[in-house]
Length: 619
Image (tube, rainbow, N blue to C red; front, side, top):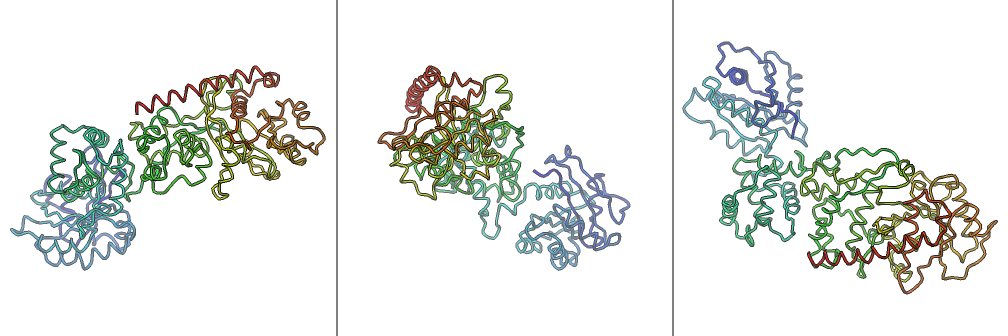
């Protein structure tokens, strides 16, 4: 909603512009009328819409054309005043004033016009017959009001309509020629309907209608009022009501009816509640609420946001197979102005055998977006209507900003749920295979991935001491001289070399020595392609000696060239090291340390799956 409204009155001399303003302010007709009234401001608390309103007069005798043009450009709404007993002043509306205003306003945002027929006390007939063709000719004319400054007829109404023309304009909503809503309005209301259809069955049932009513107007509808609304739709539209619920056609029909009956404010209240601005675009303040993120802090979804995203998944997983087919995914993102997830997402998170994103993969992708680009996550939550459906103040309330890693190290514990592992290695060392192995894909399955659909990220859950955590793997481009701060900022480093390539290890050693030897970031060496014969590395010492010398765990063997999915133990170790960077290297070498971590992981992975099956049955 606008912070204020600026109303400009123009028209021929002696039509009563100044008298109208003075009659409004003093509530009586002035004995002496000056050439021009001073600009007045009506406080918000005495206007029907609770918005401060500035009323500006124009006088040809006192102002230049340049001053008039400036006032026209500043006005939010312009009242063209004519005298009902003066035909010349009526003719000037179309021959002079409308063209003049058009020339001095932005073509993309035409200012609304109100035609004001003053001095109705001097005639017994109405000027409406003459005015209606003009209103039909110019779409920017919102309405026409006949009034009298002398006997105070329709004075308050005139300024109310002017205010309403700014706050609840007809122009963006409705096309009078076609007698139908405009495409942008239909598009916005369609999104609102789909967000409000909580069970995705194509109709708004009584509970959904009541939630919608309470959300937009702070009051539920009485059962009889609900029936009355549905009966109005039934009488006028054959398929407007289905299974005693309001269909999309019925919902759009109701809003067309509101607009046609002059109740634009009802539709505008709904549009603004769901984040739309005067141009029917989603407001930037709605999509991107302020969120302060101090340095060295990360962003994660909180419990309420996960619950909401789970409900969105359930709403669209119509066949209850715990995965989203391409059609179900398209339906989920139908409330977005574009498709946010490309084919690379299917190679970033877990999918089923058909390549469809699973429930776990879906939540993982949301976690990844929140961690890497929280502004984009806020935008996405805005499209889904998170703050409205979850009844939160803004989408930012779904985000947790973690404390700095420095405090975690001091306290020797972390509150984070997402840990970033940057994966370094020379070309062909097996980094991509290591990422895809985390998603349970062996080499055979990896070969089906198209190069253009390749992802440099992989994210999934692991369990450490019974706690579910997200591990985010990021494959760093192997250009040694161009490593950015983002390439180096992580919770743990993975250095991957190919055991069958004698020159592969040297790159890992160089990266470690130059960037991580003196840092507090834990590192792990991965001996990839361990199914192949191991060849002596052409470096000053063996990988095992290198790790001992620099107090790293011994190189971890890894292969994805097997019939079964790759082992997840190595990923649990990485997450554990990321969670407990303060743990000594002696502990990290201890087999009992890893055993405790991985046993906890196995128990909770089995328990988690059993719990999920129970949840599915209840769904």
